[in-house]
Amino acid sequence: MYKLAVFGNPIKHSLSPKIHTSFARQTGVRVEYAKILAPIDGFSQSAYDFINQGGNGFNITVPFKINAFNLATTHTINAQTAGAVNTIKVNGNELIGENTDGIGLVNDLTKNLGIDLHDKIVLILGAGGATRGILLPLLQQNPKRIMIANRTASKAVKLAKDFAKFGKTCGFGLEKIKDDPVDIIINATSASLGGETPDITSGVVNNAVCYDLMYGQQTPFMDWAKTNNASMVFNGLGMLVEQAAAAFEFWSEKQPDTQAVIKAIKALND
Image (tube, rainbow, N blue to C red):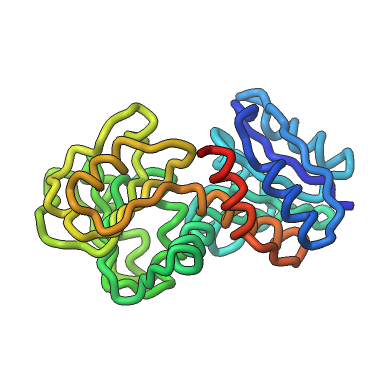
């Protein structure tokens, strides 16, 4: 029996228990998976309480991913480069921190949506934690280059420099985006949460694949992309399930089938 959980605040909305229960059913792995509301200033204590009660591993969501990075005693390369942890595996006294967000995004794009990232021009909107978490796995797909655009240009420039050793990156302000075509646009800003569309020129969208990391609803970014002739438009539901699958495999060494789970969640939301 794997005793697992997800920590967050808020946490009531989390789909993680349903997803991991489905994975467990598929793979024959016995799992007990709970949602835990941790106090804003009490994540570490809540996590240690869970570990002391026999917890084998746990996921971490907003706002505790940096706290989880600090809690972990060992970090994978994904966690190190992201500076944040969304999955911890308990291995005796060792707490191994992983970040599966970028793996989830890449798997959704390449396996589920059939998008080849090799030699493509990728534009990421936003230079916050979400972007930092996905950059390394994206660069490992050998795109032609990844451009990071952010409202505060200096943040984008710094982030691009931080990842330059892994591939071709550049950073600039949103106002510098031209109508030059790109292959893929990823919205990693929080604009969708506020019902806003990123303030960028619309010509860049023409014939591009547009992907919003947010899931669960049709976002203003997605509507804007469709209006401006995007070739395909997607939300982050597939990424959600794929990052969970990577976490499940990290704990159990069993690789679940994600397609059936994605279809089931889509059916619930339709």
